[in-house]
Length: 364
Image 1 (cartoon, rainbow, N blue to C red):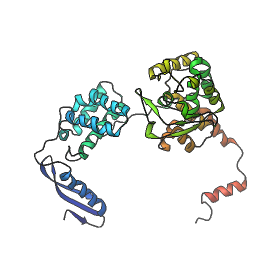
Image 2: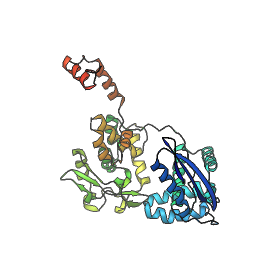
Image 3: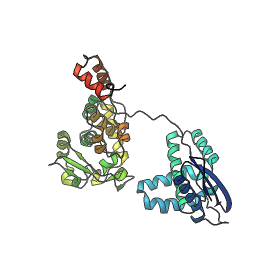
Image 4: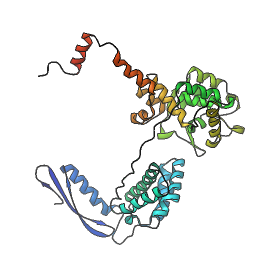
């Protein structure tokens, strides 16, 4: 038998599979019969996934063409396809291009990490490159281009940067420093939390000024309009100030886009950069990017006591953990929270209730 029991809690897998045309005996332990059988099926599937003895794996350069032009084009947004092409061309192909897929091992991955660090790349960026490498090898395995499992990549550790945002009075100063023709777009960024790509692609048919809401249904990336990040459509209510700003835009009568560029064309990210920087300079604020307006939206909601679940829906996050990363609390709010400890002690009834809730009464 290829799966058998050893002792009371261990199961042993003992199976012969073919890897790169060679017979290899694999012996592993599992904690349950179900896990052992599942692992056995996975190992035996290596014989049936398209590999045959004597067939060589393609080089990474050869495989990358199918990975991008077939897999990525079929399954990713155009902007994601372009990102994969760029990372492959600049980073991965120079390092792994001439190697066969079954030759890429952990030592080669570690050398790649060391080389990228030596060139000054940030650990987070290197992890992004490795994510594409791992995905390409996983797909190669699924498509029968790679026998056996790809190397298990170890990610570089890095300190996550603190999320920047504007305090309440800083946001007011930013709006006061904005050029008149850019104030509405900056205000909507602060009051809705839309990403820059979502602002660029926002159209008037997605805005309901009577009901006071807008629908986020699309976003622009690299000049291409597609679905929002994570393909999550959402509805965002408009504050009175946001509604007033939108009502005053001449684009309501001129075209489809809410924030069009010259001639009604879609603005580029580059065209949006300097107007925001000018507003920061006039307001005496640090230079920031448009995403800080989104951070500010979430942070201000948290400081106003809005539940995180509601903020998650407004931001269009797939997980509450992502929302918590954006939901910063200012030092003033933390200080006020600690000051609550200086207030008089709770009443006797409240104290008894607290003991009951924590289970301190009636336990022996």
